[in-house]
Image (cartoon, rainbow, N blue to C red; front, top):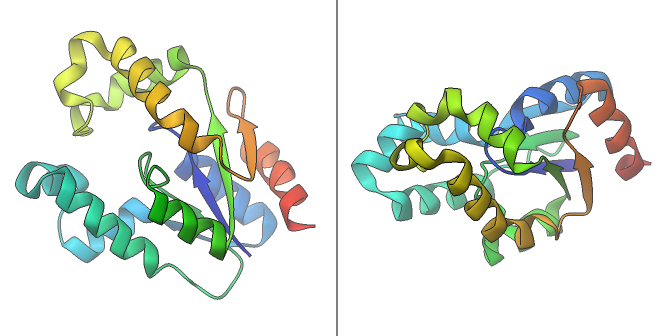
Length: 168
């Protein structure tokens, strides 16, 4: 089974996804890493040199190639699930899990990462307000996931336990 992890930037999709995959004996893929490998440049460089539209096309293309044929957890980017085409693809090829965190926790985590995140860079002075507004736009997408896992206090072990409900 393929399990797609979705959620806002900083929600722990890559970090906890790797740990949960190890506990479950699953493979692990990070969509952002696959995009960077395919494009030959970082996500930040893609955004600055080619723009968000190009990045989203590249993201969709790489996502459509992620059918490993074995049990795998795939950490997606924060905006991957926020398109009808990607949502349909992910739901038809696996199960989708939303890692949900409150705005203040996300903003706190992202304060450190913001200078390297193209969507956040213009909002460094009002990061919490931007995250709150942006998360509100995306939450309707995220809530269409097959399972929502509260991210506050999350560990790889807790995520693996939650994912077992989808697997069994």
